[in-house]
Amino acid sequence: MKVLIIIPPAKVEMFAASKSTALLAFSAVALLCVLLPAVDAIPSIGNYVKRFDTITGIDFIQICLNNCAQCKKMFGDYFQGQTCAESCLKFKGKAIPDCEDIGSIAPFLNALE
Image (cartoon, rainbow, N blue to C red; front, top):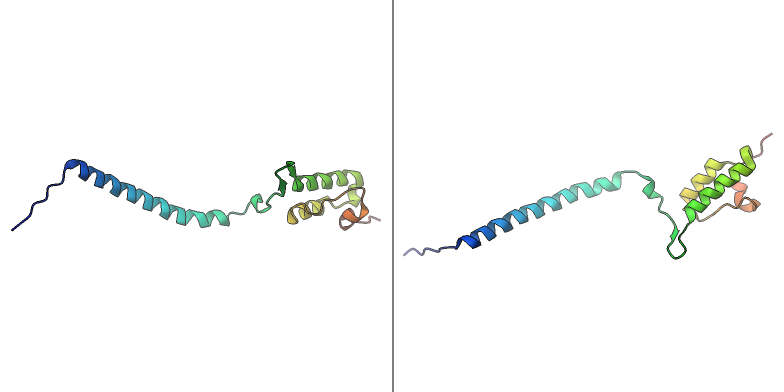
């Protein structure tokens, strides 16, 4: 004895739609698995995460870089501005140079003869 099951057309279409949705979801997950590791491998200035005070809106790295530029203008060739700027990025603005404080700019001063 054979049993014949009749499926209404509405259910067949619903099954077909869910199959294509599942295929689309699988494709999206596979694509993300391939692309996410590649995004981390791209070098960018984003590696230097900003130290930003959300309450006051102060960007410590920007202040540090501005102070390096100001000291370079004040001291000219006696001040190593490039080294100062690199230390701002390396230490994320934790040690802000003050042009009037010899202790904070001593590592960036050089004696020209």
